[in-house]
Image (cartoon, rainbow, N blue to C red; front, side, top):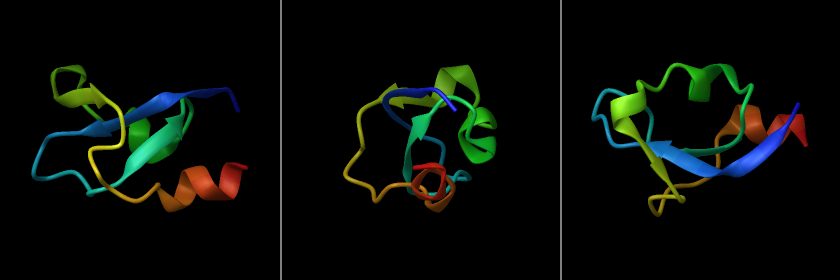
Length: 52
């Protein structure tokens, strides 16, 4: 489970969370054009928290 820099989606259809694992199932569903670096002011994804 490789940890990466924080990222989130700007798409309104995606959950308002940020991710920090490259293999997070939810994070992998983010379309590249919607992916941004940082937290976006969102809480961390529950799936990413469980990967710690």
